[in-house]
Image 1 (cartoon, rainbow, N blue to C red):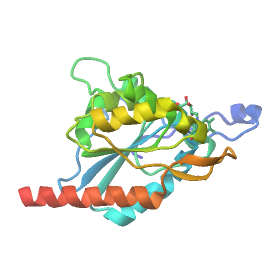
Image 2 (image 1 turned 120 degrees about the vertical axis):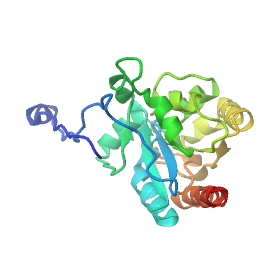
Image 3 (image 1 turned 180 degrees about the vertical axis):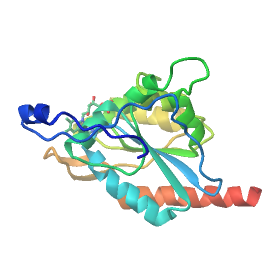
Length: 235
Ligand SMILES: Cc1cc2nc3c(=O)[nH]c(=O)nc-3n(C[C@H](O)[C@H](O)[C@H](O)COP(=O)(O)O)c2cc1C
C-alpha cells in the first residue's frame, strides 16, 4: 500500500483486551488512480460482509498465479462490514483497499476526484466476491449508499461484472434472493458464479457457500486472457 500507516493507541487496545490491526489514514485529494499499462487488465475486487472474505488472500494470489502479475492489476473495494471481517481476521493485503471513508476524504471541491467514478473508469472488469445477501438486495433495488454500491450503480454496463454470492442456506433459499439475483443477471447482465453446497461456518449444511477459489479464478483468468487478446488485436 502506498500510504502512511497509523498505529492505533496501544493502551486503548489493552483496555479493550484485544489487538487492533493497523489502519491507514483516509486518502486525500492528491491520491491518483491511474492505469499502469495497456498490457494489464484492471480488476476491481469488491468485498462485502460475508465470512467468505477469509478467502481473499488465496483468491488474489491464485488470480495472479493464473493470469500472471504482469497482466493483471487488482484494486480492492470493501463495505464497512467486509473491512470489519478483514480486521477481525487480521488479514492484510498488498493491494490498495478503498473504503467508504476515502470517498468523503478525497473530495473537497470541484475538480477533485470522486472516488466511485475514478474506480469505475480505472476498471476493465469487476468481481464481487463474496456478494452477501444485503449488498445483493441493495444492488437489485438500485441503492447506492456506500462506496461499493455507488461503484456498481455507476458501473459501465458494457464492462463485465461477475458476482459470487455467499450466504447462509436459509438466506439463499429465501425467495427474495432469487428475485434479486435475477435482476442482476437479466437486467444488469452481470454474470453469476454460483455458490456451492457444503457445511457452512455457522454449522448449517446446504447451498449458499461461495464458489471455490479454483472456480472463481478460472472464470476471471479466462476473461483476462480474452480481453487482453482482443485488445492486442485492436492495437
Ligand atoms: C461473522 C459474520 C459472518 C457473516 N457472513 C455472512 C454471509 O456469509 N453472507 C451474508 O449474506 N451475510 C453475512 N453476514 C451478515 C452481513 O455481514 C450483514 O448482513 C451486513 O449488514 C452486510 O453488510 P454489507 O453488505 O454492507 O457488507 C455475516 C455477519 C457476521 C457477523
